[in-house]
Image 1 (spheres, rainbow, N blue to C red):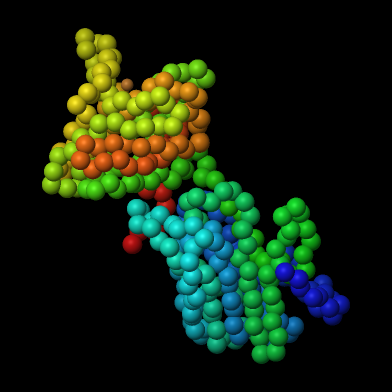
Image 2 (cartoon, rainbow, N blue to C red):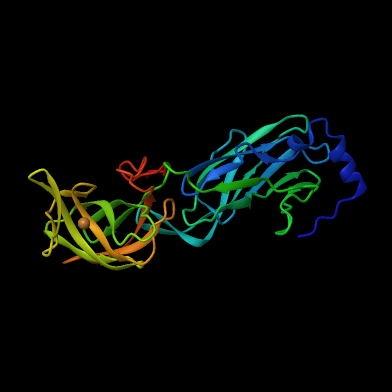
Length: 323
Ligand SMILES: [Cu+2]
């Protein structure tokens, strides 16, 4: 988009008594973790050309889903909803649309004052690390101030006259991995994880928790992993002080109302004939197959080589909103 900037307009920007950075409309927290919740605080440092701001419009980029604006005393709040570019999986429920624009109107923010406008949301879990932008438009009695410029793809540091507030999206650090839950029929699969394997290793173990919320027993009988020749269900046990592993040919039973945990030293799924190593921090998708419930696609978080647990994987929840 093109913004026509007159000499007068740039003069006003330069004459702004605040430092250049704070003269712009910006986000107080300019970094967010993919898959985590985010609190957006839009800072509005002045009005349009000396006039009071009466309306503030905030556009929500595709990467921020599950948005809820905070009402503000003295302002009317409205939102515009629209479809998400990528549907958002909220604990197994697919959400296809949500808030795309927030409008606070009917207010009166004098030019010499400063105010903040707040919303919460979630950074869509499938997003890649990058910068995204939250364009803001201030409307005054006569005129507008548009913070909507986005730097060109080839020059992220381009100097812009009226930049849109930027938000850097970063991957969850090791140990803050957002693990996921999956439902297949009455079975809940929580926090699948595995660990990195050394180059040339033939086998790897997969761990997770299965809860049967139904009234019928079911059995985990197998599954797939794209980089493994096959997958088996195993039990590890101690026999005369020796750790022994055996395949559960009949599968692993999950009785109604019970949970079974697959963990190091106990039950696990075994990836056999690995064609390439598992890499720490690089999640991998696979399937599990149950006798009655059928096949379900899951994603394993990958812990470092030799890890005894997925760091901070906990009960399978990151910092999502709970409804
Ligand atoms: Cu095994």
